[in-house]
Length: 103
Length: 505
Image (cartoon, rainbow over all chains, first blue to last red):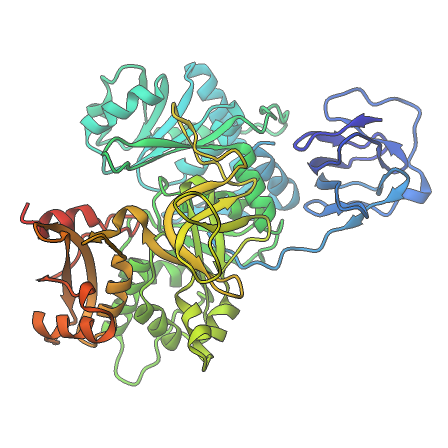
């Protein structure tokens, strides 16, 4: 468990998924992918973990994933086979922004 | 958080798609990633603290933008119209730096202290010769790192550099662009210079959306139309003066009765300056199936803070109610990720419909200048120096720069209000209203007018027109006629020049 910082990058311990934290709540939060706690990009992945079948929906690059309280948001920067959860509850995909291109 | 993350994701998600086309040559996102890595190595070897560019658009721009981001150095695209002296003065603020420029200018800049000059074509060739396949994402992750420095012209004449950190640009992109939201056949024509915030933001947003950029280094309406056709461009961003010229060019080449056709261009967004009502009305009438978007923003806010969508345009144009119709000259509603407030001189919010200064707060707002710190208030609000108001449905109206207000006999007059009225006169093509010194009033109202081809109207008729539509205090005491008004390349009216001319200076 650790306090997450917006802008930090995490990777899954059991699949290829990588994320950037867009928004994080105060205090400690455990984010998992494929059932295993995510680790900082560049950190060592603890061995012996496997993808849990209960958390294998797959993640999509470019999609945002949020919790129910809407105070945790992850941007998937690399896709993988697992799916996200925080505090035990699965994260859901955030709807796309319907803005016209302006630049 | 770093701009490179956008390119990394693009390369990962759709690496084979074309990222940018310039003078017939294209780079895919994968190519751009490779070239940026090579550029990063070149920058590190040069042992500089910044990367600058004094050039029109080319493939060098995205390579330099992302290469700088990868190397953790700020990228400073400079106005290519600057003289060698002006560059020398800016050089102090950016040295030690790499300066990418064209072959003709390179020798003039060779002796600047702390500046290593690189010729653009060599920069492109060196970067694109890389065959490397594997990269570590070893760019700095600190969101506070400076991504871009954009020099804005100060009213005192000394340019100051707006500081845009990675956190500003990345949060703007993530808040307003859908990853891979563009279809493979989409293409965006960019004819604004790289030193304009829209030019920089366009690269970042197009990369993230997967929308091919087609560069037009020097705007010419005929070239714009040909390039749009050749490259099957679907989207474009223009400043209002460019749209006027494109329309004029199309009308010249049309045979009577023939409908005007923008070809594949189905979405036109504009910004960077005020869009005159007659121009947007004409554009919408000529191109009824085109989606128009007005994007209002500033360099200091990482570009767009408010958008008038295509639906907003159509609803306003079709509205029977004056308040609804008026929205066609608004800049739409603020982005959901931002807050906008209209404040009085004491910084207090004013009521709906009341005029004041436009203030904005949000993650994409920087409001910071190099060496001068942040202009954000304690609560994080940035005062834009633009006057405006909000209507009862949250539509934002921009009056003009507060500094352009004419103070006549203790009364504050908005040049924009008088210009709008003059533009409604059937003989007037363009109008600039400025304050000139006046013994009696302090400042008097003066106008420079451009008449439409074949039209005529005398100064007195125009004065009467203003009196009939506004109040007598708004009537220009001096009207001079011109063939055209002075605009810079980013579409901004050069008011100081008009003021100097009309003041007899």
